Image 1 (cartoon, rainbow, N blue to C red):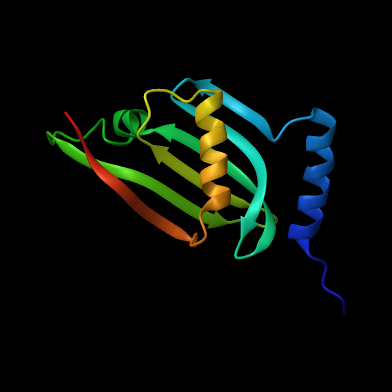
Image 2: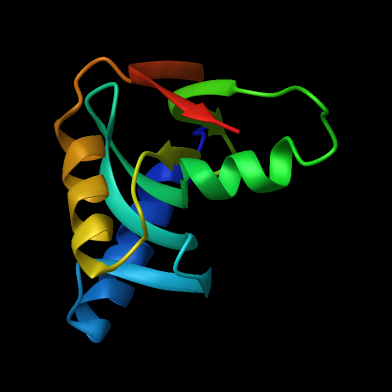
Amino acid sequence: MIQKDPFGKAVNDFEVQLQGLDSDYLLVNRSSDQQVNIKFLGKFKQQPVVWDAHIRTLSDYHKYEFKNLSAENITLRQIIEIEKKNNYYKINLMLFLKKIDDSAIQKAIIMVRNYKNLHIGRHEYGDIQYFD
């Protein structure tokens, strides 16, 4: 029995959708200037994939993920989390930015496309940021 490649079909379908939009990515949701959900094409382990990216500022991540903690001076580094789904990859990016604008979105896409050692799981990188 021939097994269909769900990633290949998803990539082809999404590529057609992007061509119709004349855009490099699809804006799924922008809930504020602190977080955005987009989809774009890229590669994972040398294979074409659709990325479902959730991009947040570190301050937004701190505000909502640590709001119930009484700890002072929480330290965070930038975070990349990757999870395999049925026919796409979900990637969460928590970045040290003041806001998520079009320039930040484009830079995040370039970063993901250029990063050669992406793998499933959570990865922290960059300088430590302090939050009160």
